[in-house]
Image (spheres, rainbow, N blue to C red):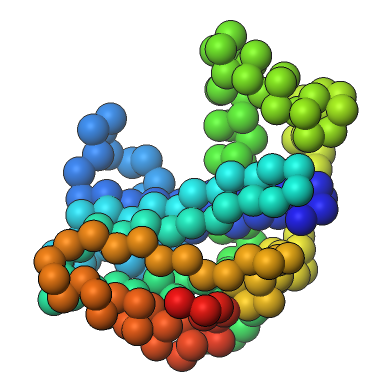
Length: 203
């Protein structure tokens, strides 16, 4: 994925966010993310849902994880698929991504990035990663500007590449752990993803 798209995907990860039934650092963290409001809020039988974005120079990994009781798994897979599909059509009238959500996701990303720079170890790791990926270190002001430049159109374009088209040789990969019934999870995911027009790959 080209570097410009990496910023859009990082914003997508912040927009989706995460949620947990227990927050160790006190309430309030991520309570307005889409995974919290659309999947966790008012739910039962679910422990947490998270998103993960790992960009590399020639590849990347975008993942979502869900921990719940097996008998409610289908319900939450459907909700996850809905949240991912909402990014494909951010201006759709039925379930739009609001401008305030995009602004909040950008601010969360910038805040996390600036906060991380206070740790010397993280600073050294970031320096090495940027040199390996770009051949140089991008000034923090330029990085913030690239985040601010991410638009609704960028969200839709990048989300479609990742969740529908599959970037490069990217395909959907499923890892499941649980009771013996977990062997049926692949077909459940395929059904939920297909219903929302998402890429099912070769499971």
